[in-house]
Image (cartoon, rainbow, N blue to C red; front, side):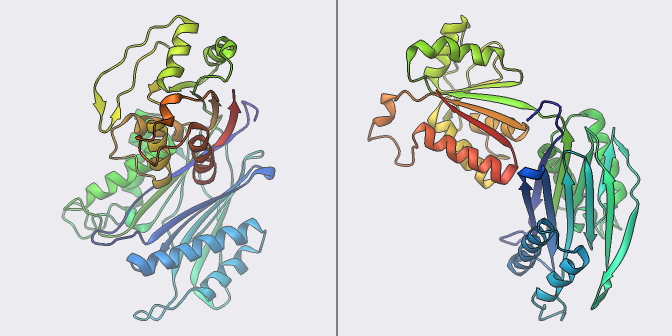
Length: 392
């Protein structure tokens, strides 16, 4: 990808309704790489819990499939509403949705909304006026479908959320009418003013955290989901792990890291020692542990230096489960860095590390190339990152 090609970071945060085992909102994404097209769907199922989750999952997956196939939007939504099961209590089938369909090469973007709070389009932290058209589908005249077409520029953000966010605190002394779109927008303005380059993941997490804070007891009284699409020129990261197969490649390996333009990560003590030796850099190693993993080391000019296989294995688990919020290990630091990046180069050394052949090590311990493949897959499929993998 060209350095000046527009990239979109898509991420989201959720909070399930207090007392429920699962969130009734769903968020799904799809990329059509050959067209540089990205489609994101946020759906809010009727009610909460398992039934709501089933409704929203069905809605999101059908919407992704129909929109990607170029099926007529109004006909797509009619089919979705006709297919959804009917609630036994309210005698209606219902799931809201917001769809963002964007072409990165041109910036042309279409937002389709039904039932969710209106999307927010920010450019330099200012609202971009939205001009939409309203439609109804046959048999569903009581449901309004809004379609907005807009053009995206670098550093634009699109923010979408379920009504659990805007209605946070509803009926409370401080927010009798809920947090509302205005309260959410004012908070977003304040966050971006402090940190103009805040990542999509961090911004969505902050919005959900603040929405929950609006509740009198700090407990979500409805499912909450917020997604941010952050359009920008790509942020790059290199991750080097494992020694090269031939020792004579060590110098080139280190130079590749030195000349890389972007964030730099080393995973593995042997790898760190090779880089330090070849570049004549000191390593400061901590004997403390962060949770059950070794703490990061420090090397001048390197953004993160961690232990190897154990940290990478935990990184994969946190990425897959989207659960780095409470983890305070080096793996959580690596997850944060990867999620805030757009294009990630993995340089994987293929020399066998004899320490990893010890049968007394945990059974789930993966050899390096396998765990990197898993990390690559989850970054591509769940986070829509562009991954380059090099075996050395």
